[in-house]
Length: 392
Image (cartoon, rainbow, N blue to C red):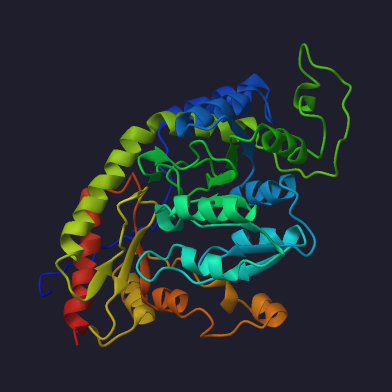
C-alpha cells in the first residue's frame, strides 16, 4: 500500500469508555460513605436483572467469582465431571478445579469457536454433572441444544457470559429466563466496564439465595446492612463462603455504563460495519461466522488469516501490526496447552484440532466504543498494508 502513513502514537487495544457521568457518580458514591456493598450495588443488581430479563442478579467482584459460586451453589463438587471447551480464558476452567470437579474438554465448532454441542453429547458419562458453555467473543452458543442435553441427563448449565453483555440468543438477551446460571464480566475491556466486577444471573430462586450467602463469607443474606439504619448487628454464617461481593464504587460505574449502553453499543457497531466492509473484500483474511440464532455483542472483533494466503503466520502479523503502532491481542491461548493442564491431565498438541486451528489463525483487532472512526480506518489500512506486503 504505497500511501500508507505510519501514525506517531500507539493505538490501544481496548481502553474503557469513561465519561463525566461515571466520574460524577463515583464521586457521589465516595461522598456517600458507602464504599463497600451498599445501596448502589443493590440498585445495579436490580437494574441488570431487568436489563437481561432475569429474575435474580447477584453482584460479584469478578466473573470468575460468579462462575465459582454458580458451581458451588449448584452442588458441583469432588469428583464430578464438568464439560467445557479449552478455547476460553483459564478462569472458566480453573473454577471447575476450585470446587474439586474434573474439567472435561471438548472441541469447538470450526467457524464460530463456540462449543460443539455434538461433542458435548459424546462426552457425557455417569459422572457428568454440569456443562460450562462459553459465549465466545460475544457470540451465543446454541443454547436450545445445550439445555436439551442438560434436561435429558439432569445436568446443571453454567453459562460463561463474560463476553455476552448485549449478546442475544434468538432475539432475547443472554441471561433471559436462564434456568441455570449465566456469569457476566465487567472487566475494564468489556462492553460494560466497572474496572473489575461481575454478575451472576438466574431464574432459580434457591440458587440465587445460595449465591448471595456464598459471595459474602457465607453470612446470612442481609448482613451487608448491619451497620446501616434499620440493619441488625446480628448475623449467622450459613456456609464457609468467599469474599466475592461487589461493592458500591464498582456499582456506581455499572449503573452509569448500563444507562450509556445504547450509545456505546451503537458506536461499537459503527466500527464493526467499517471493519466488515473492508475485510470481507480481502480473501487473505476471514470474518467469524455468526449463526442466525446469535445476536453478537461484538465484544471482540475476531479476524482470521486464511491458510496459505500469506507468506507470514499469525505471530509475525501481530508483530507487524505493533510496528504500525496498533495493539492487537489473541483470544485465546487454548487452556489444554497451558503447562498445568498438560502436566496434570496429560493434554498435548493435537488433542483438539479445531481449537488449535482457530487459535493459530486468530487476531483480535481494536474494538471499543470510544474508538474514533478514523482510527478504525487506520487499523484497516495497517491490515491491508501487511496483506499487500506478504500476499502469497
